[in-house]
Length: 164
Image 1 (cartoon, rainbow, N blue to C red):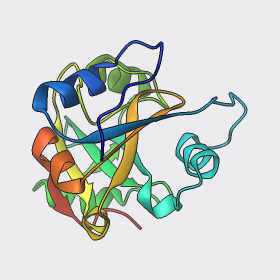
Image 2 (image 1 turned 120 degrees about the vertical axis):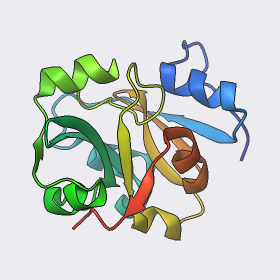
Image 3 (image 1 turned 135 degrees about the vertical axis):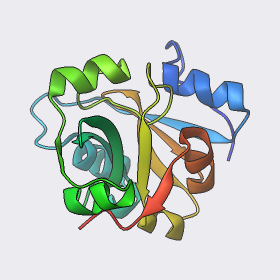
């Protein structure tokens, strides 16, 4: 997989982090439709990729600590499983403003890579069944494709069955 950046566009903190790490990745840009019902679902459809290979980055609050859960866009985050994966008891979705502040990204464009404040991260273990997966590159309409092992390494993620 060749390294690519969006022509004529500036990098995002996610792509800057990937460049700095020297890992192979590909950026996929598309015209985001503000009326789309699901950011990740839109990415899968427009890019022609199975929804099980496109992962959404969700920020949850586990026992008072912001935690990232990365799950396929074809499913949902199991909050109980996320809490268990990090040794917590209770989890709920984080306040959207807190998620944006912490990550430095806007909702629908939150990337697990290059976050302003790195958070503990859990990647759904289904990602390991793919040679590459897609996650937000830090902007709506911009996805990055990379090997799951590189995603784990760069985010310090643990893997667990957190999707349903």
